[in-house]
Image 1 (cartoon, rainbow, N blue to C red):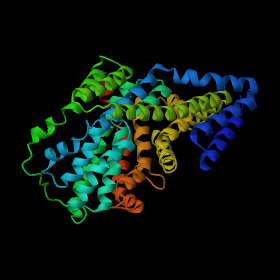
Image 2: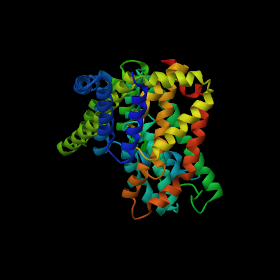
Image 3: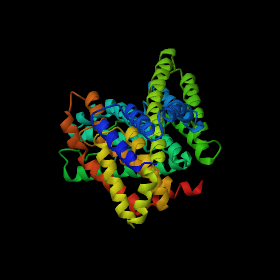
Image 4: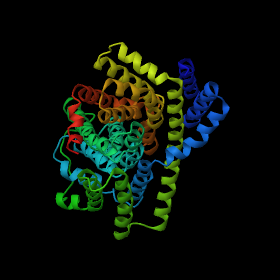
Length: 433
């Protein structure tokens, strides 16, 4: 063991990340170099050659490409196209109905997607032009969609939650169920922001009810039956215990293909594009995962994780002090790193601490995903903001979008504070499984 080498490795890792070295390459390089320094070149090569297979061969991770395929097929085949119209029909009499409809449409899209970026991009193309046309400030409209996109990684299926469950060796299904609570709580908090804005600043968000003509609400809801059926099959089976999270991914992927084919929306071109995007996305995630697995091994061999866990336990740090440190850590990392990299860089250090402190890892998984998603809308590297800029460049600048997300960021901080103060909110539903 060499705690000094562990600290040196962590320092070098963050230096490489600051220099914009790809996360996967930085993790592998630090882990290989640190292991070679402590144990020699042969053991380091052994870990480098064995880790990719041992990580990727994890059965639970097979859910990642399956849920990705479900999301890409559903999106490209147009199964999710009517979500915004259905939300508008249901919520049209509420002040700020257009913005609130877009937020709940994001929640519905999230249930078949699992990606924050994809949710923001898909809803941004549809909702922002209509919101601007209806008198919403372009800044507020784009801020609402950028924030609403973060729900994509909170409501299952969430790729971040699957990977967290694998690394934390905890139930992915229970993390999924906990994610439902925080996802809906986030959607409600964003809706409250819209209502307050309509009340205080009607020049930014018109409070008048939405005029959708003679739209039949029931018909608008029934028009999205393909995505509703997919959600019922996947999540009904998952949460009732008929199949596991891994099996749910396969059922969801097959279900999206069958439904798209049955409704004559699936073409060979759409299927091919969905497969290519699935393979590219899954490969990039798995490469980072392999690096994180090596980094975990390196920290364990150095004794750094045991040292930090003992130090935290010996300091008699209170629960709220510990959580304050964790919140600040992830909010800062979210300003500069994408969520997947930030998750896998920090878990090797934080998980032993939380195990030693007896903190529920289901609850922590849900909270950490929420904190990572806040980073998607914080400057200077808020990825959702740049996605919205690309799809709505004729309406807003990056600076205007960051200005528009400020009230939603405040709502996010309130939600995080509630979850920390009342963990039972997150653990209530998983407790039934």
